[in-house]
Length: 409
Length: 121
Image 1 (cartoon, rainbow over the protein chains, first blue to last red):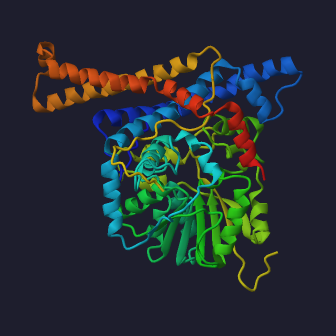
Image 2: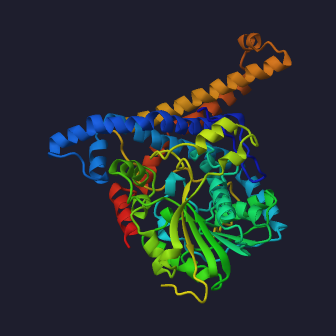
Image 3: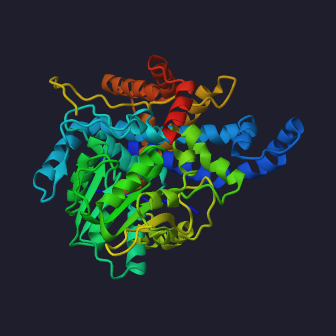
């Protein structure tokens, strides 16, 4: 598969010089090479070399992902894989940051202009303390994280995330990075054709990649995207305007929102939960239950739990915890999400995991690089640990709030 | 919220907070990252030469001859040197990251403590 996917331009996306674009393409191509050529070598290295050596030294082969990791970190092939993977991550941010540093004042001005005339709200409180799980480390090694501001009305973190995530995902989530939101919308249209949400909340929206498809699929609904980072919601609001969509954005913590009880029909999140914490996750589920109207839906598209995976798959997935500043990545997969939903007030019979197929085929032949064959190869893959995006579809947790006359238990 | 009365050019944050793992025990992490940055720059040059040849071909220009006959004046020399200094900044990004970790006490123990702390129910 020769991946030539290209991100769609919009007025908020930084412009690249020829050389900046070339460095960014290099980082993206390197990610593809690692996934397609280096990653597959880990399984034979483990079974033919590492597991045997471990068994000789310890009397038995590794029994869980922690013991596998102990053996693997000593192996030269794993060191090469893990170090090059880390470097590719650092290079994609570095290559993007250079172009943002060159044009930040113009980006800030453009965001202000776009937001000024918007018909929908941008809400940034005067005082706001971001939770420690986003401020203690710069998640996925993005310099400055979601919340740092280096200028008044800063949007740098938004621009960095918008471009960086496209390179990280190698374009697999489409020219506008919106495959997850689009996939959940498709899922709703297909499985709940009569569901017509009037008010929709997207928690942990960053720059609104997954938020905007909801406006497209439910054009009359009032849509809100919230995030703990001021620079990312500023960027999100301007980006939505640049793309011609009226969506409200606010700096707000999903653990405790400023919205009234029972004021939304649909509360969603996309790759949010694994960037929170063991203490925050139950609070977020409780908050979803509080915000939903009777019969409303909570949908979280995130990482599936470890429980049905073999230890080697778990080990591969857990590399993000150790090598990509993702402290909750592994622990989140050990949480019982069904139980959390039940404790928050959703009936167990109305909570389940399901699969929302990737929407990437919709992009085929619409934007540069998205030829039909390559798009199909991305969507038709089997699940392979360590690859970006689970081929076949996103794992989604769905829960329905009981109607007033139903028993929650 | 950012407050600054100075009107200075904003300084982008270049390094991610959090102790970087050490993959090799023989100090080759630095070398490996430099090697990959060099590879990236070779790729840039390859793309640029390719672009030049393609544009020139469209316009009917004999680029190869012009390159052989070019003499660098002071402006060209200054521009090339400024480019090289920017190149070195990218090449040694890991030294910068390490300095940053040292200055901000981002240790392996601190990283483990954060995982413990954040994963705790």
